[in-house]
Image 1 (cartoon, one colour):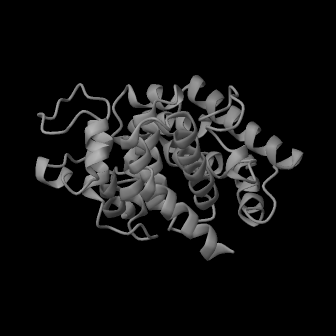
Image 2 (image 1 turned 60 degrees about the vertical axis):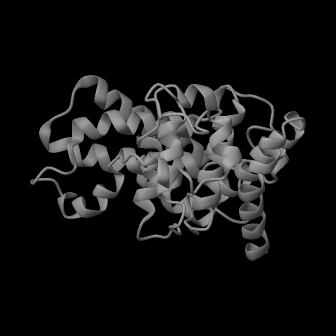
Length: 262
């Protein structure tokens, strides 16, 4: 109930205000606490769909909840906080819950959505497909003419970006773009948390793709943090021409969306 109460409020407050009210913050935190408690106590088979629905709403709400009004106030430029990247941690939690809830099972209310869920299936790009990406990006990630290694923490994200390079994100294929987080290398989130320049670039490229999809819970964070990442990289890696050149695409895409929204 707490999660359901919060959803319409977040939707209506996407613009122009981005500050969470105390009431909304209470319902969100309460919903997350109740979900965690239920998982800790063990779940019944009949509860699996409800828990998956709750987790999905909490994930969307976590992504939509960003207090920044400008790129300078957004991560990674803002002062570090323990709550940074909480939305990414929620993505990892949903991966674990997916196995428990299994919304693809035949008796699930979500079973008709199986064709949509298939968009989340992982994939690996060929070396030829990776050539679609900017040479600076593949060079920075250690793939300039060298064989792809599973141990490379960037390869899965690079494969995703190559596979979707000629696909425009929209409401019909959004699931495919959200699979970016499902195919992440285990070390990738740690690198993002450490503000590793290459991991930040890959995240910025993903933001640049999805910020064109005007979803209420997606657009603001994608746009603001994409710009913030580009500014961060230009500010703290100004001596690396590959990084500066690689930021051009995400920077252009995020700024163009601001102009369209103005």
